Structures are given as C-alpha cells and as structure tokens.
Image (cartoon, rainbow, N blue to C red; front, top):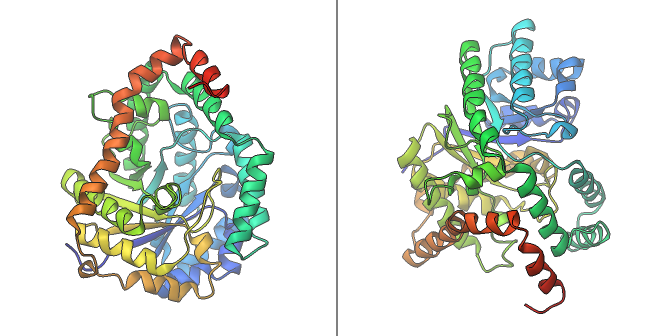
Length: 391
C-alpha cells in the first residue's frame, strides 16, 4: 500500500504541439507536477512546432515530464506490433537522434504501444465521430451521434463478426510472431544505448494469454507482450470497456475491485517500479466508437484502488479530454487527492473480479477451437444459421 503516486501520466493523442502551448496544457502539467505521454508522428520531427513545444517544457523546468509516445501514420499501422516492428524501430531511433541533435536530454522512457494495426477505414469513422461530438456538450446527443454514424457505416454485429474472421486470417502468423521477439529485443537494446527505457503498453487480454502456455491471443493481436523482457509494462484497463460496455452489469465498484486485483498481481509479478495501469477514457481514441468518462471523482476512487494495491505510477487517457473540462488543474488535483485508505475491499466484489478475468482466460482456452472453425471454414455454416435466426 502506498499513499500517493510517484508519477501521474496523461497520454496526449490529438492535441498538436502548437495546441499544447496555445491551450496552456504544458502550464497545467507544470502546476500539477504531472507528466504527459505525447503522440509523436513521423512528420512531427520535421516541423518547428515540436521544437517550440519542447523548449516550452524546458523553460518551465519540466523537460523530463514529456514522455515520447511515437506512433506511425495510420496507413502504416499506427501501433508497434509484429507487422510494423521494423518501421517502429526506425521511428524510435529517429526520435532519439532528434533529441541528441537538438540538445535535449534523452527522455527517461519511451512508450512502445503494443496494439494490433489500426484499420484506416475504422480510423476515419472514429475521426468523424470525434469531430461531430466535439460540437455538442450533451452526453445524450453524443450517444445519438455515435449510434447514427455506426449504423450508417455498417458497424453492426455481422460486420463485426466478419471483421474478426478477416483479422484472424490476416494476423495469425506464428513464424512472424516468434521472429518479432528478437526484433523487439534488438529495438529495446538500441534504446538502452541511447540511455532510455522501453515502456511497453498493452491491453489486459494480452496479459491473460497464459492459460495453456501458448500465446495465441498475443499472436492474434500481433503483440509480443510476454515474450520480451520489457523495462516497464503498462496495461490499459479502461472503465469504459467494462461499465459502459456491459450496460452496467459491471458496476463502477466492481470495476474498482477488478483493477485492484490486477494491480496487486502486477506488483507481485513485475514489482511496483516496473508495472502501471492506465485508466480511462476521457475522450475517444484513434479508432474508438465507445463511451467516455470525464468525472474526476470516479478517477479519484479508481486511483485509490490502485494505491491500495501498491502501484506507484498511474496513467489516465487522455489529457485531450481533460483540457476540455472547465478547470483542468482542479480536475487533476481531485485525482491527486486519492488515498489508499479510501478504498475498502468487498470480498464478494473481489470474487466477481476474478470471475470476470476467467472469462478472458477462457478465450485463451477455447482459441484452438475458434481457429479450427475458421481454418476449416466450418464457421460459414454457423454464421449462415445465425443470420437466418435458426441458432
């Protein structure tokens, strides 16, 4: 159990370097003593705006509070994974060379966001939703916009199933997956030569891929999370993926117990200095079409659950959404006021959290059967019966 976090880190995905200065986001970080993980696309290293932003961090004495979050162009896959590892290696090296060439201290760590490649079509849909919802404040109106766009663009259940099958066929490649272990290890060793650490970021489903001793789920996700000895590891366990997605079957209190269980296990497995969790989401991501959570009091209670488990670093996605709140400094200070003693364990909710995790672990267990149905194309008959309503 710890009483406060060493670092609170806010990813920044859509604010440009110029907007970081213009909107006062860097000043907010300085006033609250917090950090940001700034998205850096290849083009950012070529312009003056990024340099001016870094100079602003340095002028305020918080140069080390900007943690680079390098990402590829959407058309190239966006995230780091077995398909994009060579491009990502080159981007990280170019980024670190930029720091050297411009006289900035090498950052203590660089994010390696391990996620499947982003579908450019889905990214365009999400971008449209972000632009439309930015125009309204009412949550009810935002939901209507999400629903209308999703229906218009064909993001229905059948499209989702077909998309899943296509993804399995595209992503599952054991030979390529295993070859990526050495490639990512080589990238991390390169980062060490520059004097920085690799902060791997992953989804919790990748962590649960251990039931049968194989890594089929990580192969499907194209991310070698467990097979590379990352310097630090962060798992994105978002409230919105549980409470909103389950229509309230998983309550806020249930979710807090879930992240407490995860955090306690992460501390035991990796150590408090190596492991962390990112909460969220305050705004939509690059391919998100889901709900958001902006109440700082909820984040405060979630942070308490993590402190009670012994975590010392916290992430909250994202600074973009926080800067849209009436008082971003007060919002952050509300979260900073969290204390471990605020979290009270309910044994029944701990049990429920464990059962939620078993559902994810069951996906790993039945994955060979799913692969068989797809590879044998027997899934087509099942899908046909489902469409005809005969299942």
